[in-house]
Length: 191
Image (cartoon, rainbow, N blue to C red; front, side):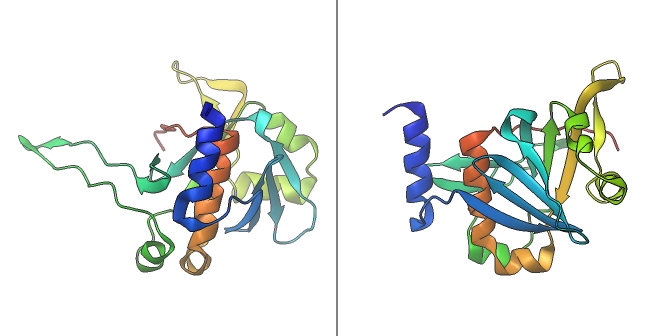
């Protein structure tokens, strides 16, 4: 089996659910649909969809970070931190299941790093641009010299907590789709 087929087999076998080609997550201010073509954002006040093809996505950074192990999703363990001369112990990397998501809300947002943020703004009208800037927080990515990159950007998709409690399997399907068409990485910011 090649790399792609191993990933697909793991996605099919995880939690005994079939691999889906599209899943919609409820985010603050609208919906985000993850599918084979990319991510579609729909503000709550309009039916106009903003399409982000996977070619425009550099990576996705879920909070908290996740990892797949043997077809199942786990919260990535936090490395030990040295405070007051003592090492704090890392978390054990909790198993992510719909039942666990109902009991505790660990997922707050997906941060999506974009190759070209101008492509997202090109098809947006005035109110949709305001939604992108004020709700989804479209902003530039910064390079090592603390200068904004001229084209790269980032959006934050905050998941609605009440919806997530009832729809944990949708989150797991979204993680499967992101892994299939993009990659996970860590986004560091100082704000």
